[in-house]
Length: 328
Image (cartoon, rainbow, N blue to C red; front, side, top):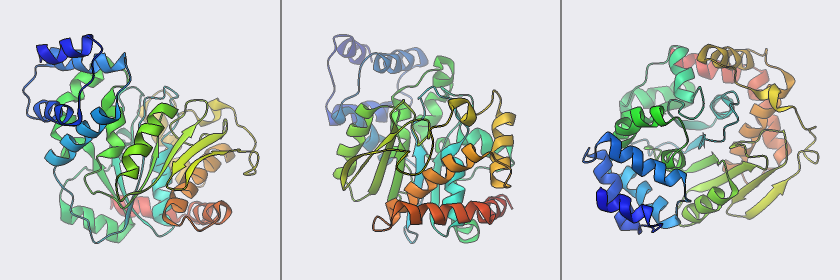
């Protein structure tokens, strides 16, 4: 590790194979906590390259516990986190909206690190028991249309670095890796990222894969459609800037989509939205993100039609029923 750290301190980069080997060694516990903290901190001070991100991703996927769900046409809605905005759990709620609309969702999530409350924090608080048993995941998909994949149960590297990430308390390259390493290998992926630079790295990687994707970045720095500002998408059809005014929305105050200061606050918002008691701003943000996910599956369909599908799922309580069935 000393050689690796000196390499980083000299502002040098790693190739794909070198990066894969480093991630493999992290997974196998070959480095101590101080060394891994220094390694992650180095990436907080410089941008990751495509080759490094690709190598880290390949190392994670090669060593992960596979979730063999190939008979389902799955979509994952996942953000990198690390945007520092502390919004409520928008992508997780949108996942249940998409499931309620009749699509199969493999939601990949983890505990919050740089934010107070990740998807796993909320799901655990609301009574969900994490599992990496394939039969359990299939039953969840058949019954609720959605399964939840808690990252540390599938990725030894995530489990190894979790205490260090928590102590550092800032985003690291593991934030960037999360959406790329869903162990179910979904056919469709909607992913939110905290910077345009990372969006372009993701786009490059997805272009080399068979995944049908939409990458989202709100221009004020959100890793999701926030409706506080216009947003940009990257997909197989190219890069597009979307005006929220042209989509029929007014810009909203960032405070209207805050997640609260505790896991309980976030869970209360989560339940309120599903139970039809969310604010107009909360509902619109969730439905917009769900609509873009549906359009990833159905690119030929207009945004308005995708929005209608998502809105109907939320208002008719189909999304709530999906959540309840997953918990039962």
